[in-house]
Image (tube, rainbow, N blue to C red):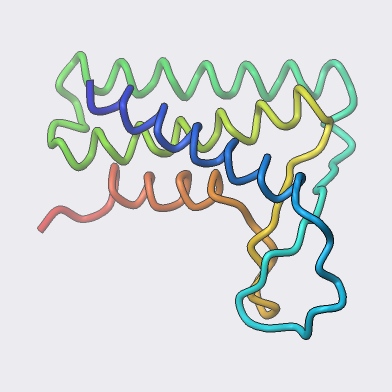
Length: 137
């Protein structure tokens, strides 16, 4: 249940913030600050090709099935925190996949200047994997 709740929460937050960024007026006249909100459409050649999109869907399904197997067999993800992390990672991956399927691009908007621009789906993926498979202490 934790996996589903975390996944839906991350997916909803990701899609909501991307909608907000796309809907707001451009603020290019603002002086740069760190961090700033700046919409970037990340496009990869695989995003617009049917085979590339299919491979992304297959990858997400394999990830989902892997998490399900790890939990159901008792092999891993036995703590609540690990299951929350796995759900967050799957929700983040679903958010970026949804962007690719709808727009053939991923909306990135968090810009620190010294780091590549990213979005909340990326945060969900990285933080989720750290929680799911990081050291337990």
